Amino acid sequence: MTKLTEHIEKKVRKTIRQYKLFNHKSKILMAVSGGKDSTVCVYLLKKLGYDVEAITIDASIGDYTETNLKNIKKVCKKYEIKLHVISFREEFGKSLCYMRDVLRTKGHKYSSCMLCGILKRYLLNKYARELKADVLATGHNLDDEAQAFLMNVFKNDFFLAKKQGPKSDQVSKRFIPRVKPLYLISEEEALQFSKQMKFPVKYGICPCSVGAHRRKHKNILDELEKKNPGVKYSVIRFQEEMKLKLKKVKKAKVNLCECGEPTKVKICRVCQIFKELEL
Ligand code: SF4
Image 1 (cartoon, protein in one colour):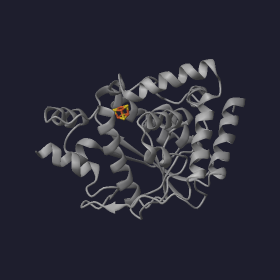
Image 2 (image 1 turned 90 degrees about the vertical axis):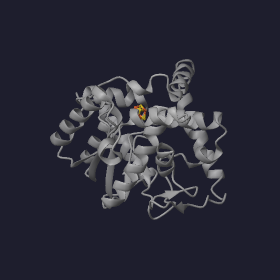
Image 3 (image 1 turned 180 degrees about the vertical axis):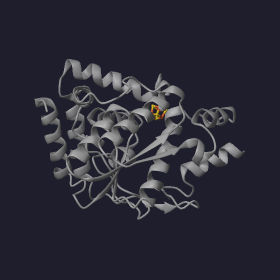
């Protein structure tokens, strides 16, 4: 191990303890994409002796998802991590691009990432529950968290900003809490870790994310960080302070959709999308 990989491993161990993300008795389902962050994360959880299985959702985005799937299969095989592969086509009978295009022709403005995110979150929660996981871990890093917070501020979405953090609340028995072991690891650190470990990872971005809203926020933050190192940490600290002060604010009520998934409103967003596809 190098100094950097040791430092990152120590920081992840500390994050898990500090935020009480899980313990050695917990069953962890790790959402992996084949990208650097989730690969680093699942490797570290296994190395640290946790009971972890991996799940990947194939959104059928051509070569991009094919290569990622091949890579994550290699990683899981090498480190003896059980991998569950779920695909949009098998689950929904349609690919992401097809659903996005049909919705657009019907006048609904879903971007690829928005639609992909909604559908993936739905499947991940469903399978985490079916596989009896105590928590669903994701590879979100410090940069992702800071970007998401800024996006919520810019949209004035107080509800979503308040929900952010290293561990989500268990708002319903049918909702499996999400945890982010890389919460305090920067994107650059995850990248260096992955490169030093020589993980089979395709570096680069998903072709569907070109022009995505989130990328603009990423560029703004990267630019600010270059001029004022530590800005991303400050955003995270601000978010934590805010959450602490708002702890006493009443939580939003969670309903069950007709499909059985938890939702803030009457019908969950996935059922809503399928209703829109049928109209
Ligand atoms: S970048 Fe967007 S479209 Fe691509 S896998 Fe991620 S959420 Fe899905």
